[in-house]
Image (cartoon, rainbow, N blue to C red; front, side, top):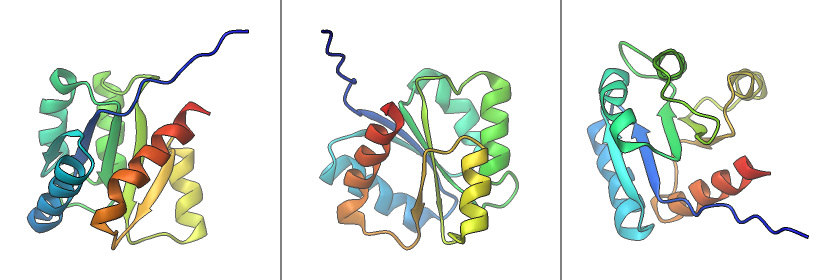
Length: 134
C-alpha cells in the first residue's frame, strides 16, 4: 500500500481591492498562519505576479472594480497560470446558494464568506487546501 502525502500549504496569492482588508489578510496569513503571501490589489497585478510566485492556492475577491474575481480567474487560466495543482477560492459577501453553485461551476474549491475572522483565516485556507486534495 502506498501512502501519498499532500504537500503542505505554503504559498497563497490573494487578490483583494480594499487596502485595509488586504493588510488584514497579510497579517492573518503571514503572522498568524506562517504562510508566504502575495496580496494583489487587482486582477492585473495578480496576472503580473502569479507565474513567478507559483501559488498553491489563489484567493480571489469576487467583487472588484475593473476585472472582478471570475474575470481574473478566466484571465489567469488564459495566461496558463492556473495549473491542476492550484487550488482556487473566492472571498465574498455574496454567499447565496445560487452564487455558490455558480462559483463551483467555475472550478472554485470553496468560498470564504465576508466578513471573515482574521484569526481563523489561515485555518480556513488549510481546510480548503485539504478539500482540494480529496
